[in-house]
Amino acid sequence: MRLRLLSALCLGAALAAPAGHAQQAPPAAPALAVPPGQPIEARHLAPHRAAYRLSLSRARDPGSISRADGAMLYELVDACEGWASRQRFTLTLTDRDGTEIETASDYATYESKDGRRLRFTLTQTTQGAVTQRIVGEAEIGPDGAGTVRYTEPEEKRERLPPGTLLPNLHTIRALNAARSGQRLLVAPLFDGTSADGAQDTTTVLSAWDAPREVAAFPMLSPLGSVRMRIAFFDREAQSQGGGATTPSYEVSLRYWENGVADDLLMDFREFVVEGRMATLEPVPGGC
Image (cartoon, rainbow, N blue to C red; front, side, top):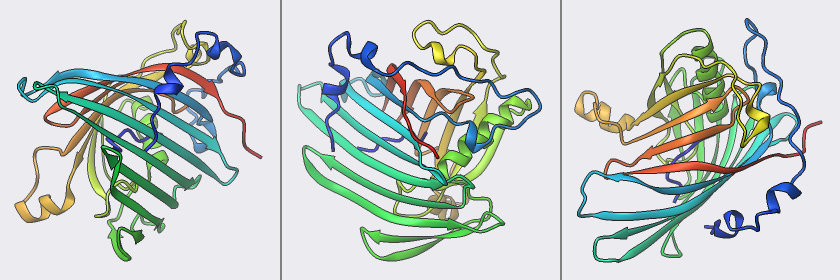
């Protein structure tokens, strides 16, 4: 799961459904923990649909943003040879004068389960007008180097550095690193949300947490989890300035071993947005 400010579909209806809506969803199949010593693989990710409520956690400049409200809907579908994902996001920011600005996005990907191919589409809007659209596909070679071919906003190619990870593979690598006791994962990451190729990332991992009862979402109870903080760095800025020390964006979250994420904090430098998972349900698919 990639959690970025993919700033065009309003999700208010998804989270404002009647109280009985969650009970009408198909019951969650019991999750199976991956046995110790066995690595987490693509097949262990859970096809699911999760809705999140977004709110302002804090603003670093109290005079700028006074309120933030929004929602995000994330869906991961097992498409046989790959994973199809869709993330729809809307966020309304209010400044101290009461002016509201709404940003929204619709972001969809298809990533092969071997982590070698990615197709992506991102449409981003502000106040209802399209401000950015990114479309293309990436292919990674055996050494992790590869190429991304964009068709929008313009036709061009960008090289991806050796070791580049695609989104789901990055999640799997981070989960396995945490389970093995590592506290750091450093790698270039390409997720299709930038028209400039890969970004460098540093992921700081907590100690692996044993399964616990999760009353609100029982399908997570048999699973271990890890809290992580992922910092994204602009590769071009680093090459020009001799190495960037301040990330352009950071996200903190808890990942369960089936790839479900909750307890989100998205740090956009000027302000921080909190995300709380409101609903979680399995999604049919697979072969």
